[in-house]
Image (cartoon, rainbow, N blue to C red):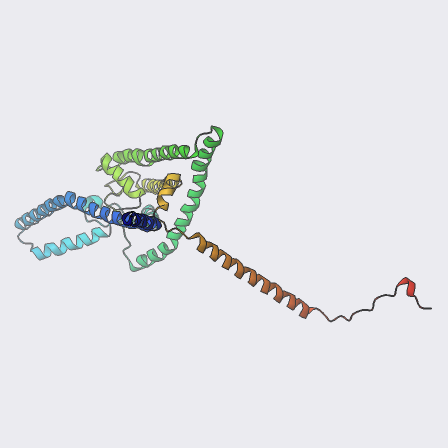
Length: 336
């Protein structure tokens, strides 16, 4: 008897705080996923980093042995300056001297990466004025971009998602949830094909040093706004039609970002995902909501009543004083 009562009380306690338990498991799962990613990246990339460090040490030692007139501090000072310039997007290599980082098309590409928060990091402002302007430009431009993307995605979603789902639901009588799921899967497939696979094939042809995997990697990193900056198109030696190529990439990134947001919004509108998200939200107490609404209504009504009474008093004070007129005598009481 006591065990059954304790078990039922535990069940009621869990059901009462179900949202908090789900949120706790969500936080724990996210932390475990972070740790899992760190373990995998470390185990995969650390051996390659070690091999690269050993190779650089051998090259440096061989270079100093072949050039005895050059001391190690001088070489390190030169290499440090070269690496510092490379971090700003300036290279000392002869095959890269023809590419300017701040012509109009490159600056347009940089502005698009800043406003979309992609930020490859391959080109950064060099001057203090440029850094200050980048701060002000981003503070205004990023909310402006969010507003622009929200408005565009809302309009596109109506024509691409809601109307087709409603048409098949009304015209053919299919279940709305089933139509929404099938439509979301098809839209995701079309988006991945048009903005990932096809552009990856194009980049693998236009970029000499990129294979299909690297091109697909660039598309995903860019459209997900991660923007690591290890692969940036249009930076090769003697790139043909570089200005037009940069403008095309800017348009591709903007359209691809809109398409990704439309697909994300389409999946978020699925009934199953809405139910899944509500598991982690704080559930509002209906009684508290009703009390707040009643208090708000009472305050609003009292304020409106006070304002109306005040307006009536003001009108009485502004009206001119009028003496009461005597009533007209009736027909039967006419004097002689």
